[in-house]
Image 1 (cartoon, one colour):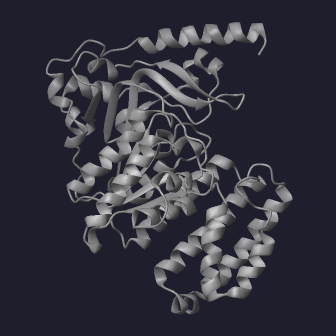
Image 2 (spheres, rainbow, N blue to C red):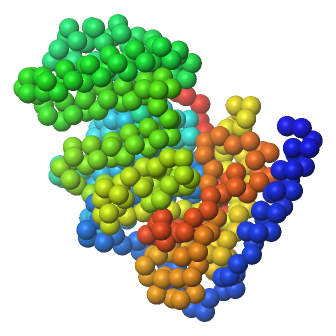
Image 3 (cartoon, rainbow, N blue to C red):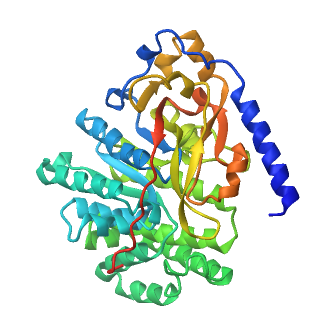
Length: 421
């Protein structure tokens, strides 16, 4: 980055900070304590089928812990027993096997998810809790774990091939040969031609699976068929994305929304909690270039899709820098809503949007554009110079039914890949 560009970005950053600091709601609202509760007080309307928990970043201890904390509340209140994460579908199935008594350790199970950002103590603790719960739960009350992303190959191929070995050995051998060059190691380096051919091959095979559905299920089980089909579909979808024949964000969020619906169908319409970045979960897309998963789900399910966003005032975030190294960056980002909890005791606060809007001053804040922290897996230090690089603007009441605000957050620590992976 040249000096002139650095100065320009710095100036824009200063201007952005000044403008963002303006507005109403910075003074404490009288009785604010009655509108701010604890995570344990989250109550979900009866007609809701999907609860979406967003996260402002992928690299904070507190935000990863909220997955477990919110899901625990839903489980304890008998409101939900299905959890789905923004992670590889095949890897999610491996975690599900582990929490139902499978071999290995929580660390090994978490590593199967396919993304380094989840190889943390927090995610392992969550997975261990799921397994411990299932150890004593009745069969019809056991918890399930899924992934609704499709950016990896290895686990999806393994699960599919194991299934085909039972129902169609010939197709198994054909696909093994055709897909041998698609691996997790080559997912971002494979040529477009190879990906295009693989996507075409998988499209043909999916049609074959549908044609032979009854025969396959007769040799196995309906749930096994569904899992294998979705693994095959993930392979096709990832190859399609990597081929460059579709717009990455557009296709990925559509695929993820479809996968959430598929998971609900497999679970016979049971309520499901999904968790991913705020930018995927929110009900209106963060920019005009694509329609996010949350907007797609909101359009399909209406009020049956319930969203909870997360945000924080300050703290360090674990990210991958432009050079590819893991690092921690310090972020401070205030807004009018966060100012309301600044002087309250505690660190984590839940705001039910519908209840808060009964207060005229809070309603004005929630109905006005505000900037929330929004950082993905990769982030370079120079991006801190411009607020639009680490925050996104939107009307909270349009995007979320609830908001969890943290005063301070701490960075996660990513563990290395286990030796057996």
